[in-house]
Image (cartoon, rainbow over all chains, first blue to last red; front, side, top):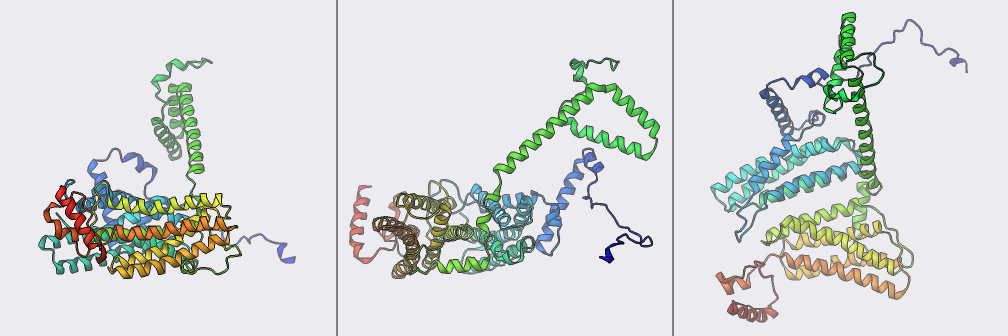
Length: 217
Length: 315
């Protein structure tokens, strides 16, 4: 093998590059000094992060901000507000037509956990909490739909209001599903995306159904 | 204090507060600061200071901190090992290794009874399809319960739906597996779960259609047709894996009965009432249990009316 006798790099070609690992936005100094900053700064920083993720959900582009800095504040706030709005009637009324707070809470979190486990078992590259974060944030359009439904129900509960509510809920359901698949489907092998999308579809369908069939007492 | 004592006096370690985990972070921070100080310059002065610093707290402080650090490492290692052993979802990974095309093919196959029952039929031990079908059934059941205005007093709608569907899938699978063990049938637990799960596809279709279109005759047609087809498929597969007439009869009779009866129960338990017969009869004297009447064929109307009147009189 004559070509292998000289395998050294010739000296006039400079070997250069970077061996730095991209560090996260926090340097170790910052981590330790956040104890000294005013509480307002801490809260505002977290609120801004949550707000930025809300914007990402409403305009789902393929950005990795939602995945990189996951947090569960947003999902918690959305879940609690949705469960509060869906709470119907008092416990001893004969027409107990609405789901209770705990039921909605459990459905959302249990459903998100099941979907995450499913996507991990199907060979997904996304981590457990990242997936929970995405699924929780994508409940935002459905929370908006719930608000709109309640406002419409204040005006009246005839056929027209039902049609308006139906259209709004269907639109928001589609938005939620599209937003979450935009983030989650990328982490799957390409031929299995449908297997991951179906449980997400079912999950948001159940939540949309609970919103649509909500009737206030 | 620091002295030249060769014996480390453990009694005086309380002033260092270095034997607790809270100081780990502080120690690391100090070490990093010490490194940075050395890098920036003032090497001599910094080292002198560091030497002084170490000398003051001395061996006792450092020893304490090292012990705490070691315990922390060991604890973390043990915890992560235990976690990776027990919470390993990779055990289930092979059962979810499917392609969408395979799932679709198996769904369609679950409605087609096989003809060859003398040769053991192959059952795919896959859990994705059955799990998704059970969740779909839960969603359809919720829809049915909502439209029929079912009121559950001791529990929640969602809990009942999930409990019913998962209970059926897991419970009946285990029961038939147990019977299969008694009857010497060649089937594993995962295969049984898979078989029964795909058999729920017929249930999903039937309930989806009949919860929305409320014709009784339509339900019976679907019950016999769709339910019957999926039951026949499961029965044929089981028969192909069992030897002996009595065993085949026991196994398949039980499975067929349970499967068909489950569909019947799901329909009649949560069926929307078109006209409440008891409603018009009793009015405000409704009994507290609000499960309203189903669509009852005309034949038994008279019986029901008299019974209801009797109950109303006794209340």
